[in-house]
Length: 102
Image (cartoon, rainbow, N blue to C red; front, top):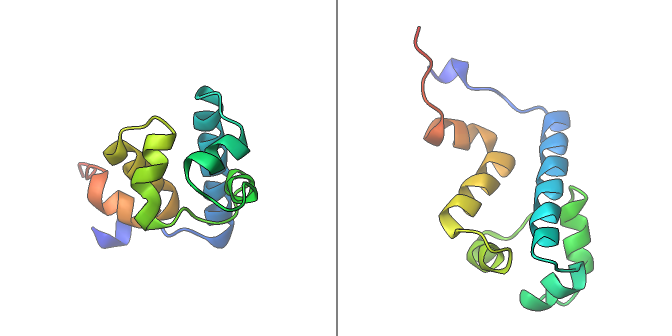
């Protein structure tokens, strides 16, 4: 069973972060927020952190997940589940993906 888990290569990890960035950007834009607006909502010192995340660099600190979900108009549990899929795909797979029938 564990042998079936996919291992993420550094290249795949980079691609997942880029996809996450696009998703975060789409959520921000759906709310009509600029990067600076979102940074202000989150009391961030630098709006460039938003840009870094949207470009696949950096990571939202875990202790701020709930704040980010609210700022982006997302249900916190679903938001964190989505983040987990991008940040920790093996963990996500273990927790949420159904086992394939043999």
